[in-house]
Length: 398
Ligand SMILES: [Zn+2]
Image (cartoon, rainbow, N blue to C red; front, top):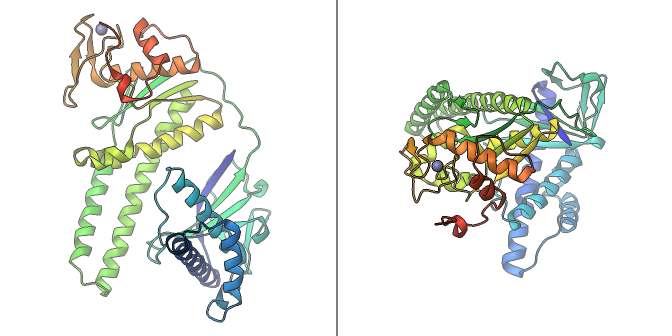
Protein backbone atom coordinates (compact mmCIF):
# COMPACT_ATOMS: atom_id res chain seq x y z
CA UNK A 1 0.00 0.00 0.00
CA UNK A 2 1.19 3.48 -0.81
CA UNK A 3 1.03 6.30 1.70
CA UNK A 4 1.99 9.85 0.83
CA UNK A 5 3.05 12.61 3.19
CA UNK A 6 2.85 16.10 1.79
CA UNK A 7 4.52 19.03 3.49
CA UNK A 8 5.55 22.60 2.78
CA UNK A 9 9.05 22.98 1.37
CA UNK A 10 11.36 25.98 1.42
CA UNK A 11 14.05 25.65 -1.25
CA UNK A 12 17.00 28.06 -1.10
CA UNK A 13 17.52 30.29 -4.17
CA UNK A 14 19.90 27.84 -5.79
CA UNK A 15 17.53 24.92 -5.29
CA UNK A 16 14.59 26.99 -6.48
CA UNK A 17 16.47 27.75 -9.69
CA UNK A 18 17.40 24.10 -10.27
CA UNK A 19 13.84 22.98 -9.54
CA UNK A 20 12.31 25.65 -11.75
CA UNK A 21 14.58 24.52 -14.60
CA UNK A 22 13.59 20.91 -13.91
CA UNK A 23 9.89 21.83 -14.03
CA UNK A 24 10.52 23.56 -17.35
CA UNK A 25 12.24 20.48 -18.78
CA UNK A 26 9.51 18.16 -17.50
CA UNK A 27 6.98 20.41 -19.23
CA UNK A 28 8.92 20.40 -22.49
CA UNK A 29 9.26 16.61 -22.44
CA UNK A 30 5.60 16.12 -21.57
CA UNK A 31 4.35 18.51 -24.22
CA UNK A 32 6.68 17.36 -27.00
CA UNK A 33 5.88 13.73 -26.28
CA UNK A 34 2.18 14.45 -26.23
CA UNK A 35 2.30 16.36 -29.50
CA UNK A 36 4.41 13.65 -31.12
CA UNK A 37 2.10 10.89 -29.87
CA UNK A 38 -0.93 12.80 -31.13
CA UNK A 39 0.69 13.28 -34.53
CA UNK A 40 1.80 9.64 -34.82
CA UNK A 41 -1.75 8.53 -34.17
CA UNK A 42 -3.61 11.03 -36.32
CA UNK A 43 -1.19 11.29 -39.22
CA UNK A 44 0.40 7.84 -39.35
CA UNK A 45 -2.30 5.88 -37.51
CA UNK A 46 0.45 4.53 -35.29
CA UNK A 47 0.19 4.10 -31.54
CA UNK A 48 3.13 5.03 -29.35
CA UNK A 49 4.67 2.82 -26.69
CA UNK A 50 6.56 3.91 -23.62
CA UNK A 51 9.70 2.58 -25.27
CA UNK A 52 9.13 4.84 -28.30
CA UNK A 53 8.88 7.90 -26.10
CA UNK A 54 11.98 6.89 -24.18
CA UNK A 55 13.95 6.49 -27.42
CA UNK A 56 12.69 9.88 -28.63
CA UNK A 57 13.86 11.54 -25.41
CA UNK A 58 17.35 10.10 -25.87
CA UNK A 59 17.44 11.49 -29.41
CA UNK A 60 16.20 14.93 -28.31
CA UNK A 61 18.93 15.18 -25.71
CA UNK A 62 21.52 14.79 -28.47
CA UNK A 63 20.16 17.67 -30.55
CA UNK A 64 21.48 21.19 -30.14
CA UNK A 65 18.04 22.71 -29.54
CA UNK A 66 17.19 20.38 -26.70
CA UNK A 67 20.64 19.83 -25.19
CA UNK A 68 19.44 21.81 -22.15
CA UNK A 69 17.49 18.72 -21.12
CA UNK A 70 20.81 17.26 -20.00
CA UNK A 71 21.26 19.98 -17.41
CA UNK A 72 18.63 18.59 -15.07
CA UNK A 73 18.24 15.18 -13.45
CA UNK A 74 17.05 12.67 -16.03
CA UNK A 75 14.79 10.91 -13.54
CA UNK A 76 11.91 13.45 -13.44
CA UNK A 77 11.95 13.46 -17.26
CA UNK A 78 11.66 9.67 -17.36
CA UNK A 79 8.89 9.85 -14.80
CA UNK A 80 7.01 12.36 -16.98
CA UNK A 81 7.08 9.78 -19.79
CA UNK A 82 5.79 7.09 -17.43
CA UNK A 83 3.01 9.36 -16.21
CA UNK A 84 1.94 10.19 -19.71
CA UNK A 85 1.92 6.51 -20.54
CA UNK A 86 -0.43 5.75 -17.67
CA UNK A 87 -2.48 8.86 -18.44
CA UNK A 88 -3.14 7.37 -21.88
CA UNK A 89 -3.85 3.95 -20.43
CA UNK A 90 -6.44 5.61 -18.18
CA UNK A 91 -7.86 7.53 -21.11
CA UNK A 92 -8.28 4.39 -23.23
CA UNK A 93 -9.85 2.58 -20.31
CA UNK A 94 -12.42 5.38 -20.06
CA UNK A 95 -11.22 6.42 -16.62
CA UNK A 96 -9.77 9.79 -17.53
CA UNK A 97 -9.93 12.60 -20.03
CA UNK A 98 -7.50 12.97 -22.91
CA UNK A 99 -4.15 14.15 -21.49
CA UNK A 100 -3.58 17.86 -21.90
CA UNK A 101 -0.59 20.05 -22.58
CA UNK A 102 1.03 21.55 -19.50
CA UNK A 103 1.48 25.28 -19.20
CA UNK A 104 3.78 27.31 -17.04
CA UNK A 105 1.10 28.98 -14.97
CA UNK A 106 -0.43 25.84 -13.54
CA UNK A 107 0.91 23.60 -10.80
CA UNK A 108 4.41 22.35 -11.55
CA UNK A 109 5.92 19.13 -10.31
CA UNK A 110 8.93 16.85 -10.64
CA UNK A 111 9.00 13.23 -9.51
CA UNK A 112 12.21 11.79 -8.14
CA UNK A 113 12.66 8.04 -7.70
CA UNK A 114 15.28 6.46 -5.44
CA UNK A 115 18.21 6.92 -7.78
CA UNK A 116 17.67 10.69 -7.81
CA UNK A 117 17.37 11.55 -4.13
CA UNK A 118 18.99 10.61 -0.87
CA UNK A 119 17.36 10.48 2.50
CA UNK A 120 19.78 10.63 5.45
CA UNK A 121 18.64 11.05 9.01
CA UNK A 122 15.55 12.93 7.90
CA UNK A 123 17.47 15.13 5.46
CA UNK A 124 16.45 15.13 1.82
CA UNK A 125 18.98 15.72 -0.92
CA UNK A 126 17.79 15.91 -4.51
CA UNK A 127 19.93 15.19 -7.56
CA UNK A 128 21.75 18.23 -8.95
CA UNK A 129 21.40 20.22 -5.74
CA UNK A 130 24.00 20.57 -2.99
CA UNK A 131 22.24 21.45 0.25
CA UNK A 132 19.41 19.42 1.79
CA UNK A 133 15.94 20.67 0.90
CA UNK A 134 14.29 22.38 3.83
CA UNK A 135 10.76 21.23 4.62
CA UNK A 136 8.39 21.22 7.57
CA UNK A 137 7.46 17.77 8.80
CA UNK A 138 4.08 17.85 10.51
CA UNK A 139 3.25 14.18 10.98
CA UNK A 140 3.87 13.55 14.67
CA UNK A 141 3.18 9.84 14.48
CA UNK A 142 5.77 9.21 11.78
CA UNK A 143 9.47 9.45 12.50
CA UNK A 144 11.03 11.29 9.59
CA UNK A 145 14.50 9.87 10.32
CA UNK A 146 13.08 6.37 9.78
CA UNK A 147 11.26 7.27 6.59
CA UNK A 148 12.27 5.38 3.45
CA UNK A 149 10.31 6.92 0.61
CA UNK A 150 10.19 5.26 -2.80
CA UNK A 151 9.34 8.50 -4.57
CA UNK A 152 9.71 12.15 -3.71
CA UNK A 153 7.63 14.73 -5.53
CA UNK A 154 8.56 18.39 -5.46
CA UNK A 155 5.80 20.72 -6.57
CA UNK A 156 5.01 24.41 -6.76
CA UNK A 157 1.49 25.79 -6.68
CA UNK A 158 0.45 28.63 -8.97
CA UNK A 159 0.66 31.01 -6.02
CA UNK A 160 4.31 30.15 -5.53
CA UNK A 161 4.17 27.80 -2.53
CA UNK A 162 6.49 24.83 -2.61
CA UNK A 163 5.68 21.34 -1.41
CA UNK A 164 7.45 18.05 -1.09
CA UNK A 165 5.54 14.77 -1.02
CA UNK A 166 7.10 11.57 0.27
CA UNK A 167 5.53 8.40 -1.09
CA UNK A 168 6.13 5.40 1.11
CA UNK A 169 5.39 1.78 0.38
CA UNK A 170 4.11 0.15 3.55
CA UNK A 171 3.88 -3.62 3.68
CA UNK A 172 0.56 -4.54 5.22
CA UNK A 173 -1.90 -2.15 6.74
CA UNK A 174 -2.48 -2.65 10.45
CA UNK A 175 -6.16 -3.35 10.84
CA UNK A 176 -7.84 -1.27 13.50
CA UNK A 177 -9.86 -3.06 16.19
CA UNK A 178 -13.39 -3.98 15.14
CA UNK A 179 -16.13 -1.70 16.39
CA UNK A 180 -19.13 -3.88 15.59
CA UNK A 181 -20.74 -0.96 13.84
CA UNK A 182 -21.74 -0.39 10.22
CA UNK A 183 -22.86 2.74 8.48
CA UNK A 184 -24.61 3.72 5.28
CA UNK A 185 -23.88 7.18 3.92
CA UNK A 186 -26.17 9.25 1.76
CA UNK A 187 -24.26 12.11 0.21
CA UNK A 188 -26.39 15.11 -0.47
CA UNK A 189 -26.71 18.69 -1.44
CA UNK A 190 -28.54 20.10 1.54
CA UNK A 191 -26.46 18.21 4.07
CA UNK A 192 -23.08 16.99 2.94
CA UNK A 193 -23.84 13.56 4.35
CA UNK A 194 -26.59 11.84 6.25
CA UNK A 195 -25.63 8.56 7.89
CA UNK A 196 -27.87 5.60 8.65
CA UNK A 197 -27.47 6.21 12.40
CA UNK A 198 -29.30 9.50 11.89
CA UNK A 199 -26.33 11.87 12.08
CA UNK A 200 -26.16 14.80 9.70
CA UNK A 201 -22.89 16.25 8.53
CA UNK A 202 -23.55 19.77 7.37
CA UNK A 203 -21.41 21.19 4.60
CA UNK A 204 -19.23 23.77 6.35
CA UNK A 205 -20.43 27.34 5.98
CA UNK A 206 -17.00 28.91 6.09
CA UNK A 207 -16.23 27.22 2.81
CA UNK A 208 -19.01 29.19 1.21
CA UNK A 209 -17.49 32.41 2.48
CA UNK A 210 -14.10 31.44 1.10
CA UNK A 211 -15.73 30.55 -2.20
CA UNK A 212 -17.36 34.01 -2.32
CA UNK A 213 -13.96 35.59 -1.78
CA UNK A 214 -12.60 33.52 -4.60
CA UNK A 215 -15.37 34.67 -6.92
CA UNK A 216 -14.66 38.30 -6.00
CA UNK A 217 -10.97 37.98 -6.78
CA UNK A 218 -11.78 36.26 -10.03
CA UNK A 219 -14.04 39.15 -11.07
CA UNK A 220 -11.34 41.61 -10.09
CA UNK A 221 -8.80 39.75 -12.17
CA UNK A 222 -11.11 39.71 -15.16
CA UNK A 223 -11.21 43.52 -15.08
CA UNK A 224 -7.42 43.88 -15.27
CA UNK A 225 -5.69 44.29 -18.61
CA UNK A 226 -3.95 41.14 -19.86
CA UNK A 227 -0.24 41.10 -19.13
CA UNK A 228 -0.41 44.03 -16.70
CA UNK A 229 1.25 44.04 -13.30
CA UNK A 230 -2.13 44.45 -11.63
CA UNK A 231 -3.41 41.40 -13.38
CA UNK A 232 -0.44 39.42 -12.19
CA UNK A 233 -1.14 40.56 -8.63
CA UNK A 234 -4.84 39.74 -8.97
CA UNK A 235 -3.96 36.35 -10.38
CA UNK A 236 -1.85 35.52 -7.36
CA UNK A 237 -4.74 36.52 -5.12
CA UNK A 238 -7.02 34.18 -7.05
CA UNK A 239 -4.51 31.36 -6.65
CA UNK A 240 -4.28 32.01 -2.92
CA UNK A 241 -8.09 32.08 -2.58
CA UNK A 242 -8.24 28.83 -4.53
CA UNK A 243 -5.79 27.24 -2.17
CA UNK A 244 -7.78 28.39 0.85
CA UNK A 245 -10.97 26.90 -0.52
CA UNK A 246 -9.15 23.69 -1.34
CA UNK A 247 -7.48 23.45 2.06
CA UNK A 248 -10.69 24.12 3.94
CA UNK A 249 -12.48 21.53 1.87
CA UNK A 250 -9.77 18.89 2.25
CA UNK A 251 -9.58 19.51 5.95
CA UNK A 252 -13.31 18.96 6.26
CA UNK A 253 -13.26 15.84 4.07
CA UNK A 254 -10.31 14.36 5.95
CA UNK A 255 -11.92 14.85 9.33
CA UNK A 256 -15.23 13.42 8.19
CA UNK A 257 -13.76 10.40 6.40
CA UNK A 258 -11.34 9.60 9.24
CA UNK A 259 -14.15 9.61 11.76
CA UNK A 260 -16.38 7.34 9.66
CA UNK A 261 -13.58 4.84 9.05
CA UNK A 262 -12.52 4.85 12.70
CA UNK A 263 -16.04 4.23 14.01
CA UNK A 264 -17.28 1.57 11.60
CA UNK A 265 -16.26 -1.86 10.33
CA UNK A 266 -18.40 -1.53 7.25
CA UNK A 267 -19.02 1.65 5.33
CA UNK A 268 -21.47 1.72 2.45
CA UNK A 269 -21.75 4.62 0.02
CA UNK A 270 -23.44 5.17 -3.28
CA UNK A 271 -21.51 5.23 -6.52
CA UNK A 272 -22.53 8.72 -7.58
CA UNK A 273 -22.00 9.94 -11.06
CA UNK A 274 -20.20 13.06 -9.89
CA UNK A 275 -19.13 14.16 -13.35
CA UNK A 276 -22.66 13.86 -14.69
CA UNK A 277 -24.05 15.75 -11.73
CA UNK A 278 -21.56 18.55 -12.00
CA UNK A 279 -22.82 19.07 -15.54
CA UNK A 280 -26.28 19.59 -14.11
CA UNK A 281 -26.01 23.29 -13.35
CA UNK A 282 -28.55 23.45 -10.59
CA UNK A 283 -26.63 20.89 -8.57
CA UNK A 284 -23.18 21.88 -9.69
CA UNK A 285 -22.03 24.32 -7.06
CA UNK A 286 -22.88 22.56 -3.86
CA UNK A 287 -21.47 19.35 -5.28
CA UNK A 288 -18.18 20.70 -6.46
CA UNK A 289 -17.97 22.49 -3.12
CA UNK A 290 -18.70 19.34 -1.26
CA UNK A 291 -16.30 17.34 -3.41
CA UNK A 292 -17.89 13.94 -3.21
CA UNK A 293 -15.29 12.42 -5.49
CA UNK A 294 -12.45 13.38 -3.19
CA UNK A 295 -14.41 12.18 -0.20
CA UNK A 296 -14.89 8.77 -1.73
CA UNK A 297 -11.20 8.43 -2.58
CA UNK A 298 -10.33 9.27 1.01
CA UNK A 299 -12.78 6.68 2.29
CA UNK A 300 -11.28 4.13 -0.09
CA UNK A 301 -7.70 4.45 1.01
CA UNK A 302 -8.45 5.02 4.67
CA UNK A 303 -10.71 1.96 4.77
CA UNK A 304 -8.01 -0.09 3.10
CA UNK A 305 -5.41 1.16 5.52
CA UNK A 306 -7.57 0.39 8.55
CA UNK A 307 -8.75 -2.99 7.27
CA UNK A 308 -12.36 -1.81 7.00
CA UNK A 309 -14.85 -2.88 4.38
CA UNK A 310 -16.04 -0.21 2.00
CA UNK A 311 -18.95 -1.13 -0.24
CA UNK A 312 -19.82 1.10 -3.14
CA UNK A 313 -23.44 0.56 -4.04
CA UNK A 314 -24.46 0.67 -7.67
CA UNK A 315 -25.57 4.10 -8.77
CA UNK A 316 -28.83 2.76 -10.17
CA UNK A 317 -29.92 1.33 -6.88
CA UNK A 318 -33.06 3.40 -6.02
CA UNK A 319 -31.93 4.20 -2.49
CA UNK A 320 -34.09 7.31 -2.10
CA UNK A 321 -37.27 5.89 -3.58
CA UNK A 322 -37.32 2.60 -1.71
CA UNK A 323 -38.99 2.32 1.68
CA UNK A 324 -36.33 1.07 4.07
CA UNK A 325 -39.02 -0.48 6.22
CA UNK A 326 -41.07 -2.59 3.80
CA UNK A 327 -39.23 -2.29 0.48
CA UNK A 328 -42.00 -0.43 -1.36
CA UNK A 329 -40.60 1.35 -4.40
CA UNK A 330 -42.03 4.75 -5.29
CA UNK A 331 -42.55 5.64 -8.94
CA UNK A 332 -40.93 8.99 -8.46
CA UNK A 333 -39.60 11.24 -5.76
CA UNK A 334 -38.81 14.85 -6.50
CA UNK A 335 -35.53 16.24 -5.30
CA UNK A 336 -37.44 18.86 -3.33
CA UNK A 337 -39.45 16.31 -1.34
CA UNK A 338 -37.66 16.04 1.98
CA UNK A 339 -40.07 13.70 3.78
CA UNK A 340 -42.59 11.16 2.54
CA UNK A 341 -44.94 8.51 3.86
CA UNK A 342 -44.75 4.97 2.50
CA UNK A 343 -48.12 4.11 0.89
CA UNK A 344 -47.76 0.46 1.90
CA UNK A 345 -46.52 0.41 5.49
CA UNK A 346 -47.33 4.04 6.37
CA UNK A 347 -43.83 4.69 7.73
CA UNK A 348 -42.85 8.35 7.61
CA UNK A 349 -39.41 8.78 6.06
CA UNK A 350 -36.83 11.49 6.08
CA UNK A 351 -35.60 11.35 2.54
CA UNK A 352 -31.87 11.25 3.24
CA UNK A 353 -32.01 9.03 6.32
CA UNK A 354 -34.13 6.52 4.44
CA UNK A 355 -31.61 6.51 1.59
CA UNK A 356 -28.72 6.02 4.03
CA UNK A 357 -30.52 3.06 5.60
CA UNK A 358 -31.07 1.49 2.20
CA UNK A 359 -27.45 2.04 1.25
CA UNK A 360 -26.37 0.33 4.46
CA UNK A 361 -28.69 -2.61 3.77
CA UNK A 362 -27.31 -2.96 0.25
CA UNK A 363 -23.75 -2.69 1.57
CA UNK A 364 -24.39 -5.36 4.17
CA UNK A 365 -25.83 -7.66 1.54
CA UNK A 366 -22.72 -7.26 -0.62
CA UNK A 367 -20.41 -7.81 2.33
CA UNK A 368 -22.40 -10.84 3.46
CA UNK A 369 -23.22 -9.27 6.81
CA UNK A 370 -26.49 -10.04 8.58
CA UNK A 371 -28.88 -7.16 8.10
CA UNK A 372 -29.70 -4.88 10.98
CA UNK A 373 -33.21 -4.51 12.32
CA UNK A 374 -33.86 -1.34 10.36
CA UNK A 375 -34.19 -3.11 7.03
CA UNK A 376 -37.14 -5.10 5.84
CA UNK A 377 -36.96 -8.35 3.92
CA UNK A 378 -37.56 -6.83 0.51
CA UNK A 379 -34.77 -4.34 0.86
CA UNK A 380 -32.44 -7.18 1.65
CA UNK A 381 -33.52 -8.92 -1.49
CA UNK A 382 -33.08 -5.83 -3.59
CA UNK A 383 -29.78 -5.09 -2.03
CA UNK A 384 -28.34 -8.49 -2.74
CA UNK A 385 -29.31 -8.33 -6.38
CA UNK A 386 -27.87 -4.86 -6.84
CA UNK A 387 -29.40 -3.64 -10.07
CA UNK A 388 -26.71 -3.17 -12.66
CA UNK A 389 -28.68 -0.99 -15.02
CA UNK A 390 -31.50 1.51 -15.01
CA UNK A 391 -33.71 -1.06 -16.72
CA UNK A 392 -33.83 -3.22 -13.63
CA UNK A 393 -35.18 -0.34 -11.59
CA UNK A 394 -38.73 -1.35 -12.39
CA UNK A 395 -40.87 -2.10 -9.32
CA UNK A 396 -40.05 -5.71 -8.48
CA UNK A 397 -43.54 -6.87 -7.66
CA UNK A 398 -47.23 -6.10 -7.79
ZN1 LIG B 1 -42.97 0.91 3.56
